[in-house]
Length: 432
Image (cartoon, rainbow, N blue to C red; front, side):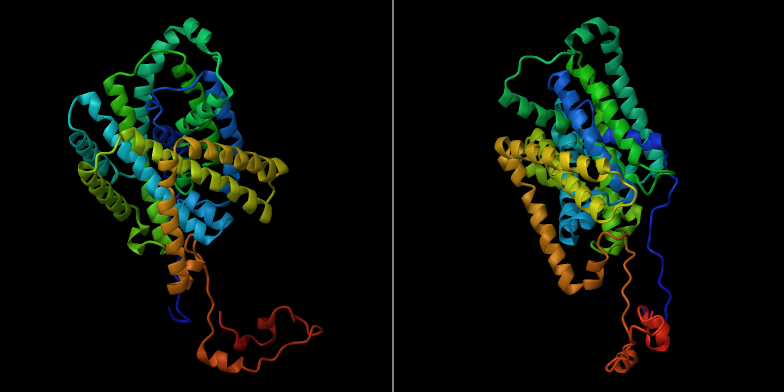
């Protein structure tokens, strides 16, 4: 780009394509509420939900201030630094891909077919649906998840006296209680995807996180108090909606990183990013044919990766909102992110104690991301400077003639009017 050339505006997503209900539906689909088979007691679920409501306060502050389809990638870049932002981007892609692969595989026992055959059919449906406009895809997910939930909640509500009697905390030892809280928190994974659609919505995606958490608290409390099982079609609809939701979330991460040239710039547009994500998912399914993996391990590994990302988001909120306050009160910028940082830290320690091998899998994309950031800093410093800024970084470089003039620059004295703005004193020597 020449000095006098026009700088093209950064490529962004078109706002106004989604309403608040659509974002809530996508987040519910991403949480895949019919997947957790053994939920803890209702009060344990409620305790985990209350903690996540505290986290949602800080998360909403970041979503409002840093509107980006990169979500956790952008939050980490602005709060923890560019290297951790790139690491968070790669960890998010790997975590959501693991969860999606787990959803592909977990359907196979319901149909009594080889898992790769069921996964292949679901992959084809998601790949085709992934090319739909997000507004159409969002309503498709809403129809799938609402239909699936209705088939389960209607029998539960019909037996309301028994359900209400079961809403109590069973006798649970203190060591087991910590593990149950971790299990309950992992069941809520998916609520954080609301931020990935913050550039698609008409107003703000921040309130959607609160609503999704509240809906899941009610749904999980009812589910954990009854023995009613989801039908095969309801289970399939829920998991298909979850697969499609995760696909669109990963597409937005790819687009955000492509827009900032961290990944190839061709991914900055949604359709190439969607096609690329479908190819990666297809190749991953093909690779898993030769590497037998338990689907539960895949979904759990992905959930633990998201847990690490939420810890990073909490710490990012604590640092960013206090470095750059903009009307946030002490609760949103200090107490809520501090409580959620400590809480996710404790949950991370519990995860390390019980799932060391799976949690260690998160170290690989984090290490790769840190290395990727180091390479960008050395090889492409302009790209590195724009990480987390949505492709809007501005770098001003003087021309050779201007450098020659500035070898012996005239430094204005403090009494000269405008001394704090050198371009006002000798504008012809400044390039901008």
